[in-house]
Length: 138
Image (spheres, rainbow, N blue to C red):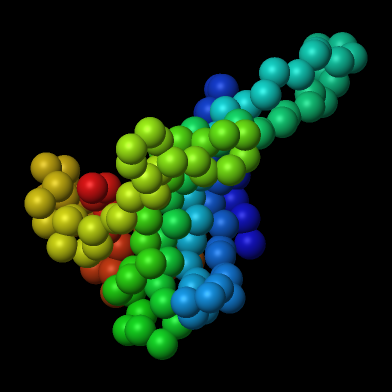
């Protein structure tokens, strides 16, 4: 499953992720921010226009390790530098940064507002509202 939200020249892509790696099986959500690639206008004003979303800007991998307690996000991290489609290390540091979950939510200045009225995915019941909060990024 994949969801794409396009805002002018920027797109947010959210998709399910499952990976079998050297250090175990991971699953969770990948959230990417990408830049739209300009396309030449085609046809009349009423014609459908081509939308290409390509250049990565930022990516968060909100992953659990299968076998760990669900929701611990033991493999959560983000990338903020890329060379083409691949995440790349910056000089002297890694482009992969760990995300502190879930304790970081409590220290986030906006967390009180988020806990009071968090957005719910379509079809989510009110009783499960407490399970949704925005993570802070280290």
